[in-house]
Length: 378
Image 1 (tube, rainbow, N blue to C red):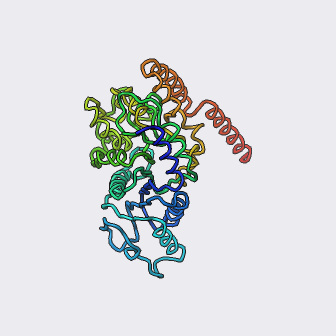
Image 2 (image 1 turned 90 degrees about the horizontal axis):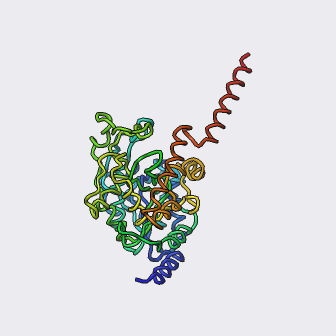
Image 3 (image 1 turned 120 degrees about the vertical axis):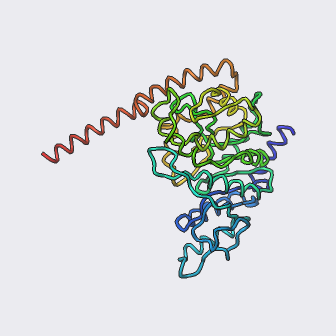
């Protein structure tokens, strides 16, 4: 298929989304029903002809929790006594705008991923809902995305088109590159030495590629989820990496099996197992387009502070397309340059805990606050 044909195809996709399936996946709860309805309606307004699929991972107002087929309004508790007007209207908007609403098989959360948070690990719910939603996809291109995230414009298609035909090396597995987020796509030569950690907030690309990726994903076992509660860390594990309780990060569980299938020699036994760190970078460069969420006009209520501050606070530990381009241009000569440049920056960041300017500013503010506290009490 010629590049010219694909470009025209993507331009047509941006017009009305006739060849696009949007898989929204996540919980549908009384507390987030209105937000889900607004985002679903936004997708419909942005792509009038797209196939919109809402794959529900958990729901607290279904009449039965065992639905795994398509859902209808009657499956939900919608009596006046149980729902106010806003929630009833939100549910109506959701069913008016989505083509298919499905409920994945019930799963339960795992213990927290890290020792510095109380948030439960919902990875198995994510896996079930992603698979269930992708089963319903019938269009050529798919945007699989968490249900609390949206792009307020079509710029993500333009970014995809502009980066799609960059050179690919021997590690290319997808038929066409897949667009992912820079946020939580870890640069494994910096603060977190975690290879194959590619962001799972969304995937955009050919439906076949995205279906194949998720077909390889397996649910995480309870022993793996608490692995470092009873096992030692690898030697030279840094303080940030020691926060993890899980054997592999969720993003590693999702992506590594797919590439392991094509390259059986690869190994990833622990979250900071660096035996194949260079290969993880080559695989990223050959298979993914890494986009900045701000450039795509992304909105995610829970993490908007991260989206806004991406360039300032998380630029070091996350992988940018600019660094990937250096790897693509000449892997053998550029990889060492990338390593040395990023390692220097990350070591400085590790010392200061943040970038130096931010660290000094915070120390100054603490001193001012201590002085004001002393002055008020004196």
